[in-house]
Image (cartoon, rainbow, N blue to C red; front, side, top):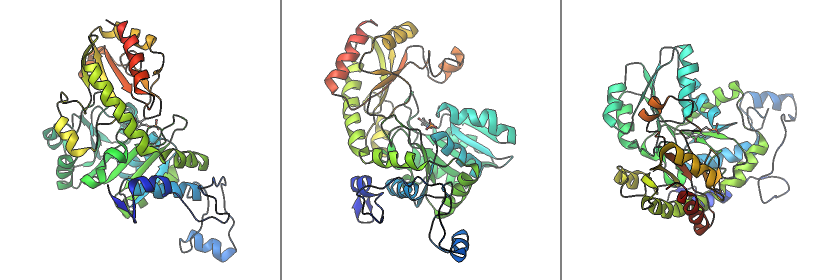
Length: 395
Ligand SMILES: *Cc1c(COP(=O)(O)O)cnc(C)c1O
């Protein structure tokens, strides 16, 4: 693991947000203030000119929020980090920062749905062009690049199909054309994958998922390789007003302390479950990068420090079996989202992707019997027992 200013990853998780404050509190307090007192007119002027340290207004900066940003930048090996009110706020802040009318974005086709919808339905109204392609085939990236391409946007692994993109190879092509590489690293977290180390320029997180990890807040983050990128992104966030709230920042500071423990335990559970599912008579196939049967198993071991805890599997009984499974689970929650301490399950064909036509769903690999399982930290025996009793009804 990387060393961060003398400390290693797991120590940064616990102590990265420590700050000097007058009462010596052992944890970073919530500075729930929207504005700050200047000592005098000269101090106010110096703060606005950026010549004196100090806070002005919480949309621009806040001690609790800044403490969190410092930790997150360290974890991704970034120069700086900007946190946002949600993951989608992070995605849109990046789009708005770098896309001008007439520009083109190349993106993984199976990205998080709203990250694609917002380009196709909204940013296209301002003259943004787009190509959604299967980035797991590097040749596709090469073919999609145009003279006006500004961003290569990658999500790996994809949700829920668990397809990987070779980040090093993708970065190499993009940088030959001066294209900014943005990676949504929500699924892996910096515990399992550090895209900036592989050459990417900007990393995005929905901290709603693993980083906060307790399914109790919505939040986002953007980590930049350089100071220049961060300046552009921060200015956009401030003017868009999609800032984080200090209490929200405090919650993430608290949640992130156990990130390593959670991610490793979830992954340990997921590996056992994936292997069991693969042998189950109700299951046709399992997609999990930790299985040798995954077509990109080798790439996974090369670019990730572990396969993570998201599994998708195909039920032999199709749509009907998918619904039966959803109605039969007891411990595992029937819910969307992922990355919390609790195991969650969803059925894309009848839930997240139900508005799509069957044809376009199938083209995106979302078959009728596909189930997504986000594995939590519960006792493995209880999760397996729950899955067994529910799957038994699907045979
Ligand atoms: C959830 C999610 C987002 C959006 O984040 P919100 O916090 O819900 O706004 C973006 N990307 C990925 C991969 C996600 O899972």
